Image (cartoon, rainbow, N blue to C red):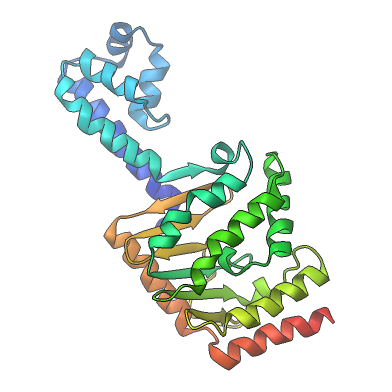
Length: 281
């Protein structure tokens, strides 16, 4: 893919900045003159019109009023909110712990009929055991410096994952082979987790495939989930990026298909999982 998810978010923010700058220029104001009208530091005007800072609703209203363009405020606020929703900082949503993060996406999981998942780093959340999820979420809490409610968060994750057992849904799940060999929580936890993958692969709603380490159809990508054909959630180290633009969603659909073409399916995928189990013995 040509640009990263975070770059796309910045592009959305830059579009807001360009519109703010154009309003100032149309009003015949310099940045310093606008700052004086608003009672702001000149640096704030510079940050907002260059895209280095994201404007609040009040910032936009004040900017438009100072430029004699109050009629532009509503559209700009809507666009700015949409741009902000594309990028969710983990640090912000995890302040009170991880349980709420698991619960927040439950409605989206429940309404999705076809979910396509690609994981390059860990076992997908919907296929995690309680012990594996607890160990992983505890690591995340320690790294992020957030309250460690990993046990409660793991329970919420497992509750959300019950959608895979409901009729009328499809889960097309791809994992990199390295995921099967990266130990989370120690050998016993990992053995239980791999055993559960073998069981989950037999569910009628689940198609579990493994991208072999030797496969060269595509390079490893960031972990992503496609909800029907409407939305993509991309997981980065510091944030989750939401993609809804049809052309970009199409790119992720194409990537999932390309990765799937080079993956091991059915018995071949189960053999790779079994091999990873044998290494733990």
